[in-house]
Length: 131
Image 1 (cartoon, rainbow, N blue to C red):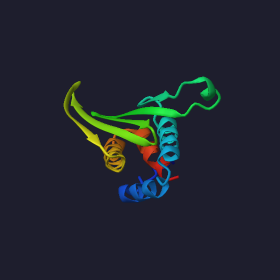
Image 2 (image 1 turned 180 degrees about the horizontal axis):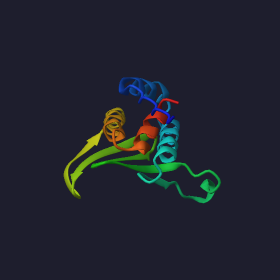
Image 3 (image 1 turned 90 degrees about the vertical axis):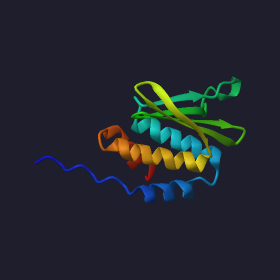
């Protein structure tokens, strides 16, 4: 008998969990990027910090997440995260918004929720955000 798919976590629960974990933005950004990359490797691009002393454990500098027609970019700059959300249809960007980190997270979670209906990777990404 095939296993039934696990239910998706409630989006409000995910958002609350993310807010609780976001006390230190730099550390939270690294953890978030690691979880998204592990859950959706084909939909996530990561740019790591360079430098002489970062070779053993280079941190994530920038992440790009593709969820359907939405592209989410976030870049860690001097302890803050600069975020952008773009929505494209057939490769044409219809709008691009600069967002605060909290708004970006909310938009990302919502887009992953919509995308999870057709993508097991997006579904896994949502689950990973609450564990």
